[in-house]
Image 1 (cartoon, rainbow, N blue to C red):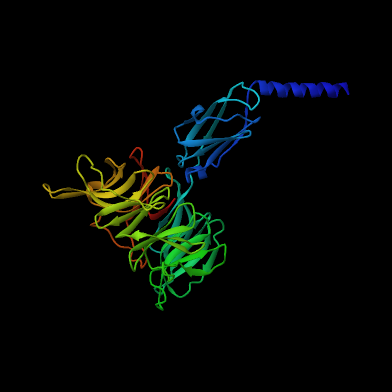
Image 2: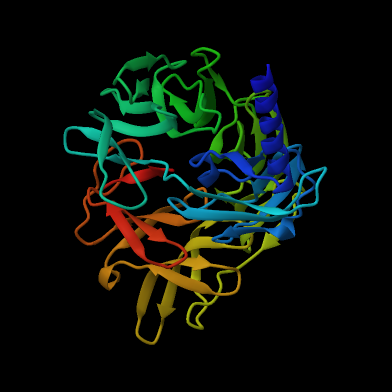
Amino acid sequence: MALVVVLALLCAGFAALGYLQGPKLSSAQIDTDLVTERAGQQLRLFANQPLAEVDADDISVTPDAPFTVTTSGAVVALQFEAPLAYGAHYDVEVGGVTSQVEDRASTLRYSFTTGSPPIYYLDRGEKTDEIVRTAPTGNERTVVYSAPGIEQFALLGTAAVVTTDAGDGTSALSLVSFDDGGVEPITLPAPGVIDSLDSSDDGVTVAFTLTTADGAYTDSLMKLNLEQGRDILPVPALDGSPLTARSWFFVPGGVTLAAQDESDAQVVLVDTSTDAVTPLGTFTSLDSISTDGTRLGVTNPFGPVSLSISDLTETEFAPSPIDGVTPYPGDFQLMRGTALVQHVVVADYDANSFENLFVFDDGRRSRELFHTIDNAGSIGRISVSPNDQYAAVEVVPNVASSVDDGRTVDPRSTDVTTVFVDIGSGSVVKSVAGFDIHW
């Protein structure tokens, strides 16, 4: 009995000593992959005792990353306002931490390294096409699926919905597992051609345009929720009829999509879970959606416009000067804030020459990221990683010698490559033989 009493006293003494020394970090929790893909992810620091309110001014994150902080019981939660960089080491220090009952301060320290989520792309060959997994940097090249006549694909975690050439002028749709190579054919409403295939962030919803041989659908936007079965249903327009889409994008973080109706150029939002349709206005084109999902890149008769989804504020903009010269605008991809990447053309009329450039534009000036050797090539589709760290630009190195691959859907040059650029440094970090980048 005496021994038990002594041990109990010792335990109580150690516990009291721990409290007198101030709070200690007992564990931490963060999804190191998801924190590079989405804003609003949390680092949760668990202390060994309930804490007094922690002030954001007492917290440092290195390298710098904007955040908000909340304190609940023994947990300090840092919520990052933007995705973090890939493969980066972060040090977090929370100073002046006190318990709810003692004012003895201590410092909580935690370090973590973010992940580098895989990137997928399509590499077409003469007989067999390949869906390839890689990373933003390095030489990894892993074929996750191959088949003749792959037209497009949309990611669903470690699976994908894939369209292939059926051999009779129509498309075939399949669900493919990257884990075991299993293929499940999915029946279309009627034989036809699929284009503009993409998937939402929920991992089960895909959409695409469909033109059927029987005339029932022409460039009609269709949706498929694989969790609810294999029924392919039309996405409605404002009047309830199937939406004929000129262009469209899923809004990051959900199952809502933005589309431009071919019939009247109206841009709409459609919640694919409820079919609720919201009109946003009539524009010349729908070009991109910002990486944070808050704005649409559209054009009106006067040029490019940033359209706020929440309040429909329209902000017209023009390409910022590059080396003092204002370029001509081309395709653009909105990023967070006022930044974007864009294909521009710089003309020198005295020399009768033109430069095709891929640039980063912060709203004040443009900075060159890439141009083809001797300006002999062309710059095609562009995309930006979810964390605004890298840009991918499709390039045909030499237009004069380029040969079309002859595909019915999404034809490309047989020489098309995709160049990855670090936006911050302007450095080309890698290139791959292929296109259709999926971050």
